Every structure is written in structure tokens, then in C-alpha cells.
View (cartoon, rainbow, N blue to C red):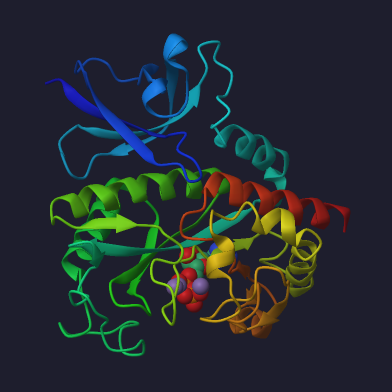
Length: 335
Ligand code: ADP
Ligand code: MN
Ligand code: MN
Ligand code: MN
């Protein structure tokens, strides 16, 4: 039987790109995924009089929603001369991660997000606020937890797709959740973060709930949504000194990193709610108020990884992993 391939790509919406997708029906004898195209004038990627953009498949996996032989296909966007489109941040990520492949960089990303229904965070009372933060993080019970059915369906979908999902938890703000992808290589984690986000929006559709990656959905005494980015190289997985060197390297270019860690990063990195202020840089063991945290087990064992706590939930993983690999791997190479 013929099968469906859902072609997914990152658009040109400013200041934060959105996901788009459309379905291609392929004959059953067609196993390799063809190049395809779309109307870039409808996605802020091209002018109307030269609207064609090219989709090139870069990663595919079983479609856990449709099942059968159907696929999800992550694509990169190209101009019609096959050069990377200006919105294609994957191309540079690939170049940089190839350059430092010998260091075997690995990433685990903690993707936080917030469910919305009826125009407010899922579970919040109309025109008001729920009780203050405290009981919701990793909570249980229908007075504290909203959307677990969606979270379970999304986790199952990621597992069926073969995505490297490694856990989920309810977050500090009611209606806010997290899942983790990794540890896998820079391109793998980035492709899989984008596909897992697509699956999250798609699964939530069936529950009439929406998802936002807004880094600070509610002002005031409510946690924002981040994408803590855990990183190691082969050297760091063997030596604590290398972890410290990588943390210090991140401290050399704090502005270049933070300004590319997602729109509105200054709204979230206030210095409150388990964040360091976006204008400051610090690293520390177990310190959830530092920009970069070294988990206590890594200090104890003298090896492991570090956690860059600054990226926003709405960050582009191709950009964040590329910056971290470039900054840390170049410093570690110098010794
Ligand atoms: P926390 O909430 O305490 O910050 P999580 O358990 O949510 O931590 O996330 C930790 C992440 O670290 C996971 O995504 C995991 O895959 C990742 N991780 C574990 N070991 C490594 C490693 N050596 N290199 C990179 N990431 C790692
Ligand atoms: Mn976490
Ligand atoms: Mn979290
Ligand atoms: Mn974390």
C-alpha cells in the first residue's frame, strides 16, 4: 500500500520560528524520500514573485500517530539552487559539529512548555490564579496536575517514533511540564527536539489543548519555561578538569550565547525563580541559581557533564548546540 510521509520544517516567523508540515503520499515501492517544496511566501521565507523553497529530508522516523508504514520526516529548507536558506540554522550546526566530531559531543535537552486551554494556562481558574507555586512540581492528584493524559500520550508517541526521550516531569508552575531528549549527538538532539515539539503540538490537538514555548507565560511570581542544555565531550566524561575548562570557556562569551538562546531570554533570566540574571555569568556545583550548573554526582565522580541553564524553552536547538560545541570544543582542543 502507498504510505504517508509528513514533511516537517522550521519556518521564518520572527522573532521565533514556528513548525510547519504537510503530507506527501508515496507509492509503496518508493523507499527513499524525495526532495519536495513549499510556498515560502506563506511562511515568511520567500517573496511572492519567487516563492518556491525546497525541502530536503534530514531525519525520518515512524509516524506514531498514523502508525503502519507512515513516516515523520524532518526537513531542512534550501533555496532552489540547493544552497541553505537563510532560516536554515541546521547547515551551520552540521558544519561545526563535524569539525569537532572527534571530541564526541553529546547533549541532553530538558524541554519545558506550558499547556493552554480557554485562553489561560491549562487548569487555571477563569479570571484568577491558582494557589501559589510549591505543590505542582512533580505533583500527583487532580488538584495539582493538569494535562497528564496529554503528557502520557506524547511520551508514548516519542517512544514509538524511536526518539531518545529520557524522562518527563510536571513543573513548578501549574500547567507547565518538561520532557528530556538525550544524551545524543548535536544534530540528533536538535532534529529530535524539533520532531518531539511537532508531536507535542499534534498530540495536544486531539485534546483541544494548545502548547506554548513562551519563556515567561505569566509575569510575576511564576516560573518561566527553559530548555536546560546538558553537554559533555568524551574528555569531560572522563575528567572533571575538562568540565571546569568547558564551564570557563562558556564564561568567555556570555553575551553571544545569551542573545541567541531564545527571544525574551531577559524576561526569564531575572535572577529569580532558579535562574541567574541574563547579564551575569557564573558556574557552580549543584547551584540552580548559576548560569551553568555542574551536577553534584559529576564533582563526586570526577567526570560527567555540565548543564547550561540559560536557554529558553523557545530556543532553536540547532543554534544552541552549535554555539556550545563551538565555544567549548575549541577551548578544549587548545588544552
Ligand atoms: P535536572 O532536572 O536535575 O536538571 P534532568 O534529569 O531533567 O535534570 O536532565 C538531565 C539531562 O542530562 C538528561 O536529558 C540527560 O539525558 C542528560 N545527560 C546525562 N548525562 C549526560 C552527558 N554525559 N552528556 C550530556 N547530557 C547528559
Ligand atoms: Mn529537568
Ligand atoms: Mn525543569
Ligand atoms: Mn535542569
